[in-house]
Length: 72
Image (cartoon, rainbow, N blue to C red; front, side, top):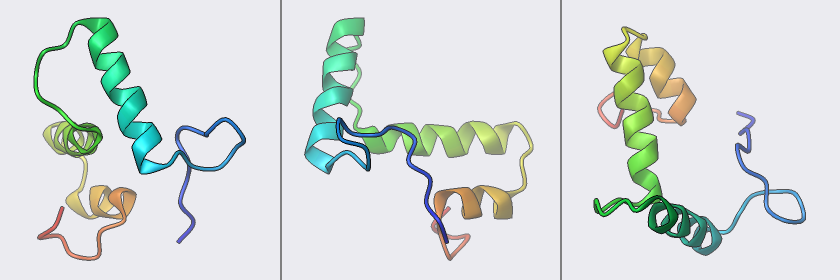
């Protein structure tokens, strides 16, 4: 399965986990968000919002790259 890169690093390709966390926390600070959250929180929120909009669970599962619907 081909994975899409939503945000490219400075030289193309994927951000490192450390860089992504750094950018995420800098954005939270800039926006004044005090809620505890990690980049994975965005992934969970994305899936939850799709599910609430009536999107098929199997489709969400494929978007997230999960093999088991229990994980989704």
